[in-house]
Amino acid sequence: MTLQELYQGIGLLPEDIARLEEAEKEIPIEEVTGYIERLTRPETAAEAYDSLKEYLGEEKEQFGMLYCQLEAARRLHRRYAKMRIPDKIFFDTMKCFPRFMAECRVRNGKRYFDRGWWTFRQVSMRIFRIGALEYELKQTTGENSGESAAGRAVGLHIPSDADFSPESVERSLEEAKQFLAERYPDFCGADYVCDSWLLSPALKELLPEDSHILAFQRRFEIRGVDLEDRGYMRWLFAARDDAAIETLPEDTRLRRAAKTYLAAGGRIGAARGTLKDPRA
Image 1: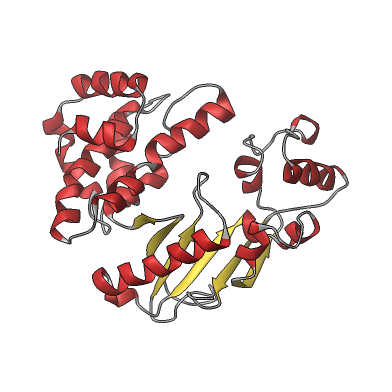
Image 2 (image 1 turned 180 degrees about the horizontal axis):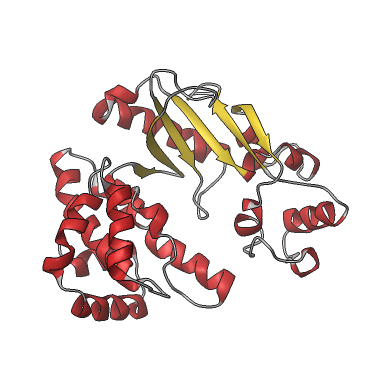
């Protein structure tokens, strides 16, 4: 696979590709190959990201980091093929890059890359997009975390473009269970865990009983609530964490209800939960 094939396959815009081609010309590949190779390994990806960030220096829009991580993804494709993981899972997983850039444009009015601190998980085969949801293979201690005592857990993440219907979520969970059984059997029987504003108990006051979000919540046993978490500002309102309540958008029923709730002193926060049963 070439970089151009990868760029086209994940749906990057022509303007993104042009910036990436500029970054490729400016970054000596022989100097970053070591970082890129380490990015593709789960045990070294975090360290490689930190070291690469230091090497690249101050990058306001981070197209150098984006180029290096996509080069890591390109090289990773060979490992996907060796493990007989379908290309659909590969491309769906790597579509996180243009999705995050589109989210930047919504929040900031400009398309750029600001999520390298997260996407090293995708390019090291720690996170896979399977249908509606993403699944992260996590090593845990199990102590006071609500996660698998055996040392492994599967983290559930909800992409912003997910079809969140109960049928779609169920199909994703079933496909993930089969995927793990075939390719990561050590994770069979591990807890499925989620930490998100979507599990906030406050949403029960803001949404109708037949809400897809509440249907998702009912799949989990809630293990902890953090009322100070402000992630909902980004994911619900596409706003900065410190945005004033009166400036928040009101263009959906949930946004209107949540804005009114916050203005009255309510707190949404986030919650951590464990899936009651992967088939629940």
